[in-house]
Every structure is written in C-alpha cells, then in structure tokens.
Image 1 (cartoon, rainbow, N blue to C red):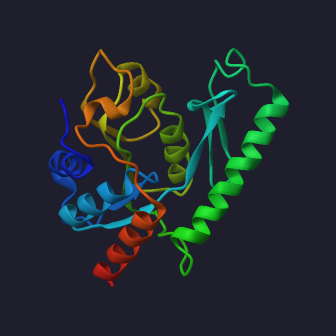
Image 2 (tube, rainbow, N blue to C red):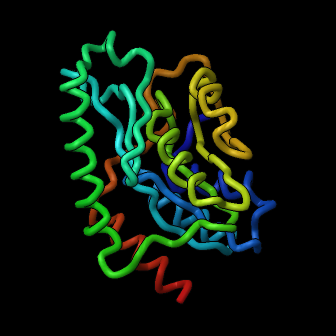
Image 3 (spheres, rainbow, N blue to C red):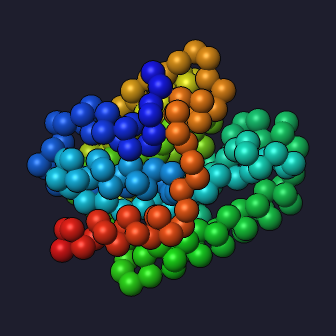
Length: 213
C-alpha cells in the first residue's frame, strides 16, 4: 500500500478508527510528521488532538538509526543492540541529556500557554506517520500509559512486522494499515513525504485548539 501523502494516510487511519467517532478520543501525535495527521483524525473522529513528546536516541555516527528513546518524564527505552551499535554508557548519558533538552524546548515552543491535555480516563490514540524501529512509539505509549487512559490505541499507516511484535502488550489495540515484507524506510510508502516544520506543528495545534474551544 502506497499513500499519496500524510493527509491521505490520516484519512485511511480515521476510517480504520471509525468505532471511536463521537466518543471524544484524544489523538496524540509524535512530532513532527504525525501532527498534521492528528488534526485530520481528531476532526474526523470528533475528538481532541495534542502532542506526546518523545525523542529517539541516535546511534553514534548514524543519527537516523534509533538505539532507544526517551519520554518527557525521563523514562528511557534502550534497544538490546545499542552496545553493538557503538553506544557506550557515557555516550548514552550525553545523548539522553541532549534529547531531554530538545523535548523541553519543543514543549515551550509548541504549547507555550497551556499544559498538555490530560489523558486520564480518556480513549487515547497515539499516532505516527510510520514506524521503523518503533523506539519512539514505545516511549510514547509508556508515557501515556503512565497517565491511566481508559483505552490506549497505537495507530500507524505502516510498520514492519518485527516492530509490531515489539509493541504487543504496550497498548490495548494496535492499528496498522500495512506491514510489508520489503520495508526499508517509512518514506518509501509515500509518494509525497516532505519534512514537517515546527511552524506547521504550532499552527496545527493552535488551529485545533481554537476549533474545540
């Protein structure tokens, strides 16, 4: 399955999540790519949207490859291959500190005038535009699950099968539109897959908040 762009993928995800329409779900996006998608899904399901801030921990010399992840509260997931990727304890500590600083900066940038929407007792749908290693999604689900949602759903357009297996038990339900064998990168499953800017994230969050006020 190939998606025209993120908005087309979001529309297909919204269709797959139709059972939550009208139940005021909280749709949480992992920035930046998933934020425009969350806006579409929240509007379709008559819910709210916000961001869940997590960061991948980058492999030494290969910043696109995740060796783990960190959530906003400081909880860390570390993949079992982190050492094989060359990550020493000192490197990991430095990377954690740097990514936590980025999370703090993004929180101040994205939602400067309000606290995050509380997921306690809510139906919460955590989305991303696709998963590779799944590291950031693992941290995101952990962060939300710690806040006692009524139901926690992980929803993504595409992910490899072994990554989906890693997510088992970390959410009440996993919705994935396609799980191909020939997976190399998330972008290969989109015709148009541009970078999403911080400005676009800020605008999406502002527009969404005003629409629900």
